[in-house]
Image (cartoon, rainbow, N blue to C red; front, top):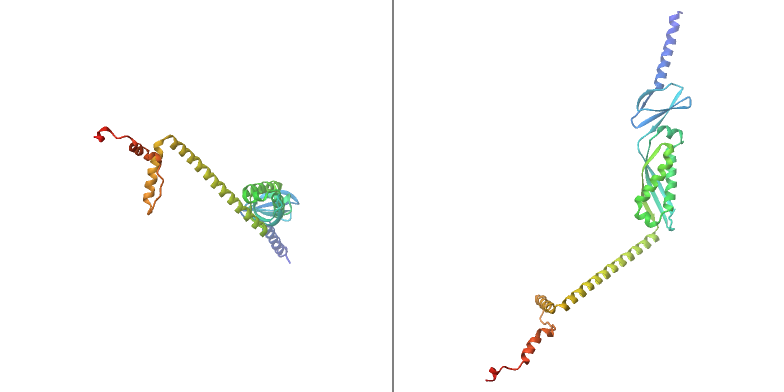
Length: 263
């Protein structure tokens, strides 16, 4: 057996081994991911997107998704500051801004963010009043976002939006709030009616004062009222006649007759 015949299988084995090593070293990372590379256990850095090579058996890569993640926070039964029991759930939007920190600083950044969102939701709702929870939800969302984002910042995670989805109350509390809302509406209606009566009385008082200063104003008002009544289809109208309208006629009737009339 010649040397050539011995080298041919060996060269084939070496070539196959090189092809396998090249295949193991080639990595392709999509645009929305980053590859965190470790060399013999030490952090090298994040690579990608695109094609790059790793040293086989020496370097290891962990892929991290950098897209925005939508995470549901399950309903939490919380007692508000005014001792009302509610069930509240929320949704959190976050993304990884530092892939190396998301791998090195925390074991599972998704689970860690989920846990801190649950805890923060209970704490913030527990410090809020029931009316504030129903009316100032936007402010509570901003507070939650700030707290969760501050807690996840060392992990390279950015929390952009936190939204409370549903607030569930028991039936007794719903009925009590309905009675309270109805009482509040009645109170406002009575206040508006009283304010209207007060303003109307002020205007009537001013009108009476003006008519008292001007004797002819009452006469004009009397004639206007007669005109308005005449529009209606009434058969009998009893209307008082002011004395000042007929006083001049009565005075003329009581005057003595002139001398010409005696002749």
